[in-house]
Length: 152
Image 1 (cartoon, rainbow, N blue to C red):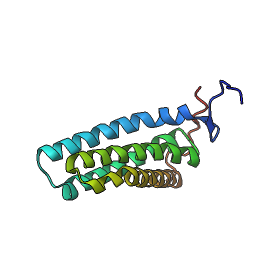
Image 2 (cartoon, rainbow, N blue to C red):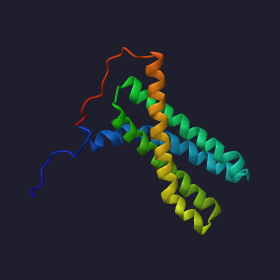
Image 3 (spheres, helix red, strand yellow):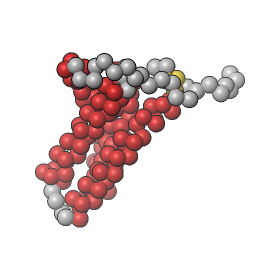
Image 4 (spheres, rainbow, N blue to C red):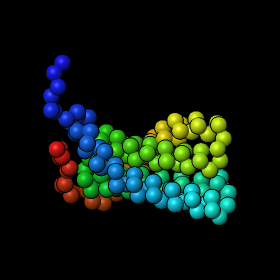
């Protein structure tokens, strides 16, 4: 098998396209989550009663933003949108799991390094699709024709 200079395609888009689409929401959400974890640790706030609901709300809000920005405005199809939202959710879930492990340092929290990214990716994918469905069924931004094409 010879090496070719062709990009690897997933759903007719190169892998770099999905990574570039997910980087900005991931960096923003990770910075906010890191700030929240550091503040909750510094102020000695209860993680489960204060920080965890805020983290969940932020993940849902970012999934709504990704769904609106990429699904409604950029007109990505549902498979591409779920992949980008899943990348953002998985990254944010991993950041959240790492901060939980650092803060509490229980051995069983090491399992969260696998489960939290997976659950966050599923949540982000579903919420982004629901967001697109809501905006399209409401007719908001429905007639705009700007489809992102292959960025190579």
